[in-house]
Image 1 (tube, rainbow, N blue to C red):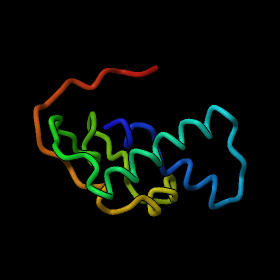
Image 2 (cartoon, rainbow, N blue to C red):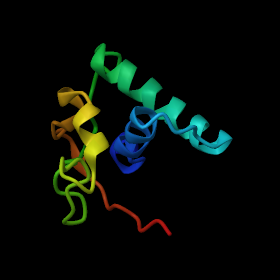
Image 3 (cartoon, rainbow, N blue to C red):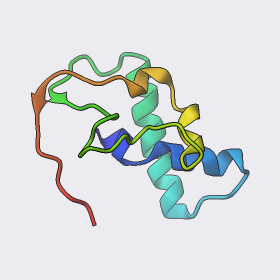
Image 4 (cartoon, rainbow, N blue to C red):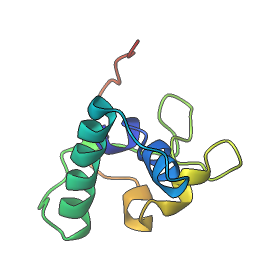
Length: 93
């Protein structure tokens, strides 16, 4: 959930375009990459929270389209819904 809501596609797109990230963006992207690497190597052994990145608050956070071209660089395994307990997603401003 944290990974998808952190908008990794944005950072991938910036890197693809060879744009530099501000220090706080670099830190955020490093966290997302750490989550991605651990998840893709089965470093998380269980799933306690149900989350579908294609239906978070009625939004597809990982939709691949012209508005979100960086999403195509996200590993497919990161796009799969997880099982577990449903939790309320808080609004972030």
